[in-house]
Length: 415
Image (cartoon, rainbow, N blue to C red; front, side):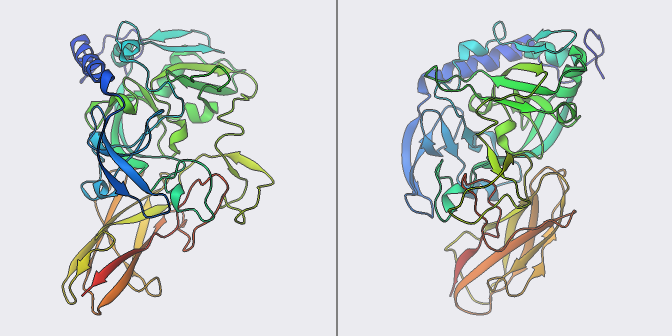
């Protein structure tokens, strides 16, 4: 491991020339932030018509809002590969002034500050982070807490998302734990605060600040990432530096992270309480239309699976073998099995799991299927992880529209 001040060689180290080139690419994109409408798509729920919009460094994505940018990945992308391409990766910001102007991201201006209850406050550029600390990689799913919210019944407030507010990428960065150890957490530090460069338009709007407990923050799996799928982070996905917390919902994955502050006591910020809370229940669910008696912060991903091929509405001939394909993931315990049904869930058979890219990644599954009857056929997939946790057959409900993970049926037309 390369400690601060070490002269040990760091393969893949970011040179100043590379960083300047990447910053220049982001700067050139700034005038086109709002994107240009290409066409429209309709998601399969009420009021689901959305524009497909081309943003800087992105192919046309499904736009939910322009300010702040909220862009959803078209679901067909998940059938392309297990790693979600950078230009198709979803975008989610919370504050109106986001992302920050590229001039704030230049190597002579962007700094990561580490302070508060530490013995040695730090101020580091990305190039200095890479030079002073060991770089590591992990493949992990990033999923928005409200992914699939548009399917909730009764409907709930918030962004009406389809299934595309998720993605899987190979993240490269330095361990957050190494940086915190270099700063030296004091014994009285009880929480670690993370803040990015996105800002509210009005003073009354709370800044987007998230907290972690020290034990989690010091886990070797958490990264301060500067690369995504072998390339610099896209500007809209956190360039030049973002927090990566494998197995946790995306609300904690702060983009353009610029401030890390250790505090004593409990942080009372809006985005920790009342924001991003779920019912204090093992399934994070309550009866539709009711109010939870107690809540806790949202944290780890639950088990999910999807059929990515064939797509809904596909026409398939009777007696023709089709390879059904999909993805499954959980919070890092790993997928044990995926079961497939072609009769609406009455009978199930085991699918074949593909090569694992790591316990935090999408896991491919496939199964050959030859339809024997004509008509509308309902296909289903149900994943179980190594702890025995699985997916409910029916959707669970909570007032924020978080953590949907029920079995998602796909109807195809057999002729």
